[in-house]
Image 1 (cartoon, rainbow, N blue to C red):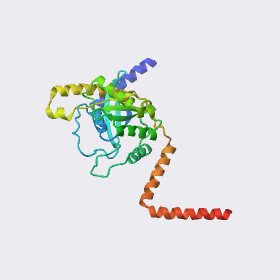
Image 2: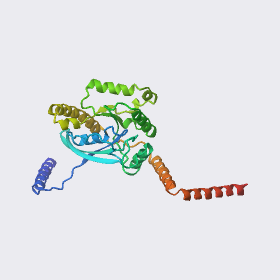
Image 3: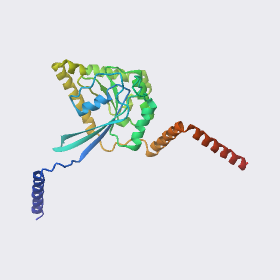
Length: 300
C-alpha cells in the first residue's frame, strides 16, 4: 500500500514539474553553494586579473598603466553549475578584491596607506560578512618576490595571526612558466631568511596555487599558437584553484571574535572623530582630567 502511494506521489510530482515547464516559468531559483574568497597582496600583482580569470577563462587584462585601479574593496560575483555525485550543484563565488598594499605609484586620488587598507578589510569583516572560505595572498611571478611582498606578508600575519588554516599563496602571471620555473620561484620565497624567521611558510595552510591569463601582447599580435598554449596552461591552473574553492567546507569562520572586531571598529571611529573634531576632543579630555583630579583631591 505504501509502495503504491509512493509511486503515485512520484508520478504526481513528475507531472507537476512538466506542467511548470510548459508554463515557461522564467523566474525559477536554485539553491546555491556559496564560497567567499578574499584576495590580498601588494599593489599591481594581479588580484583583479585573478578574479576576472575565474569569471572568464579567456579574459585578457589591459596593459599595465600608471594608475592603481582598485581603490576600494570590490565585489565580483560569479556562479557556475558543476556535476557532483550525479547532481547539478550551483556554486556562487563571492570574490572580495581588496586594494593593494604599498601603493607607490601615485594615482589621481591620494594613495591609501597600509593601515587604511587594513581598516577597509576590518570594516568589511565587521559589517558585511564573517564566513570566509579562502584567503588568497597573491604574488606576481614576473615581478619576483619583492621586499614589499615580504613586508605585506608579515603585516597580514601580524594583524590576522590565526588565519593559517584558511590562507593560500597564489602566484599569478604563470601562463608561460613551466613547472620547474614555478617550483623554483616557490623555493625562492620560502628559502628567504626573513620568511623563515617569521615562519611564513606555515602561515599558508592551504598550500600554493598558480594562476595566469591570456597576455595582452599575445592578443594584440593575434598569435594563435601562443594563445592556445597560454589558454591551456590557464585552464589547468584555474581548474585547480576552483577545485580548492569547491572542496572547502561551510564551517570556515573568521577567527577573531565579534568582541575584538567591535573594539577595533570603535577605536577607528574614535580616531576618525578626533581627526575631524580635535578641539572638541581636547576640551572634553581636559574637562575629564579636571573632574578626575578633583575627585582624587576630595578622596584625600
